[in-house]
Image 1 (tube, rainbow, N blue to C red):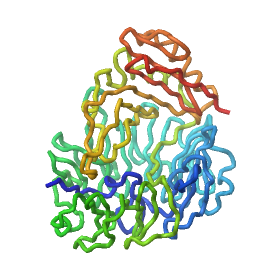
Image 2: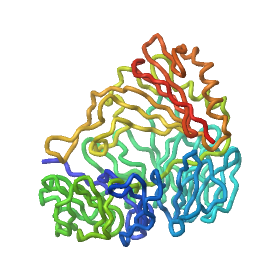
Image 3: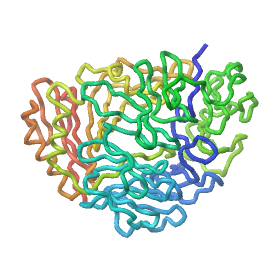
Image 4: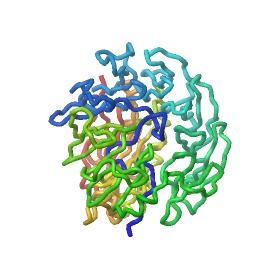
Amino acid sequence: MKARIYLSALLLCLLLITSCDDSGEYPYRMSYLPVQLEGSAKWSILDVNSGEVVIRDRFDRSPSTVVNGMFYYVNDDGTVDYYDVTSPEHPVNDKPYGSATCFGENGLAIASRRGGPLEIIDKKGNTVVTLPADIIQCRMFMGGRAEYQNEEGLWGYLDERGDTVIPARFDNVSPFYNSDYALVVPQQAESDTATFAVINLKGEEQFRLESGYQLIQPKFVQGVLPVIKGDTMVCLDSKGREVPNPTPEHDAVDKAGYDNYAPTADGHFIVIKSGKAGLVDKRDKTLIQPRFDRLLDLAPDRYVAVEDSVCHLVDGKGQPVGNARFIHAHGNLDTAGALRGFIDTDLAVATLLTMFDSGRCCGATPATTLMDLNSLLGPNALEHVGSNTIAVPQGPFTVAFAFSDNLASVDPDSVTASFNYSTRVRCVMITLPVVHTGLDTEQQIIDKTAVAMGRRGFVLQSDGVFASDAGTAVSMGYDRGVVRLYYYMNPSYALSLPRNRRK
């Protein structure tokens, strides 16, 4: 018998992360959804409740998640403007920001101007609080807290007044979501395996995740932390004790013999039968016959139904909500941090140079396979079908491991998938956004890094491309305010990267 997946709908969704409502375990209230309508190259915004397209074919790229009626859009020059979804003709801010977070449910966001410190702003673009200059990064407000990073690279939490409620003393942190608990990575030696700890709203450590448990996602769901123990999912309470799964009773669903199923945030179950998705309640009463290619939990009584790669909204009975048909949607919660408007280029270069040498980059070598980096993967291979890249935030940098083949492939039953563990790392892509800083920052970082490349074992081969005797190569460039360093395991793949200045 196939192993059942008793996880939140977050792990089932391939296009969207679940959203919204006070009544269930949705992380934020979703009333609008950015979509790319069928037959259009531009992005629109859909009213989730009515199914009406309220902003049509307006954006060249996806706007951010719409939270509390607010969203941001990244302009062609990399700057950011905020919009109210009910009046999108003009941004609410008078001048573009260089870096920004989504608005939280509290109606506050964090942003910075070029060359300026981070600010907490309201929905009209007014500055509520200017944060201290030694705070270099903040993430969006969730549960009245925002994670912040200081100049030493350590993380803590701020409240809505900008006051430090948990000092920066962790290597990394997660949001509190809708919980009194969050997961953090305590300070540790770089060679150690990451240790996860659970803290409360005061920053007091509740317990550390033991080595026998594998983290599924960094959040508590219905008061418990789902983890993998061996081949089984178990739940831990706020003290680290194993407790019963609070997922709604599913005995009837389990006995029905579905190929797979997962609970929705409002207590129903999306089921898979013969490759088709439907919806049942906890008594296995059919709410939606299994007839869609995919069914994704979006909001209370709202689902995204996928048929032949085209999506549309349906209610809890499978009836259409509006007539919009779309091919892409952006329901993922944007949790990228806003960065202060200035940067120490010497420190950025020094950090960058610690990430690679002639034989390896960020721990990967030409022999590194997906199996070697399997700790970066979740348990659901279906989420990685069609992708060959794993991205990992490392402070202000993002490190992406690109593999020669896709990370996972669909199994012959067309329902499950398996990881391609033997595929090797082809390229490691390191990016650093600096659009929030002065216009010459990118060139300063590239120039200073180029001077030091000899110490890393590389010599200049062609425009912006450095080769090593070890058979690796590095390309450097920048585009739209993002510095890029690509480390190639095979120098024959190395190409010069563009150097496009911001306006």
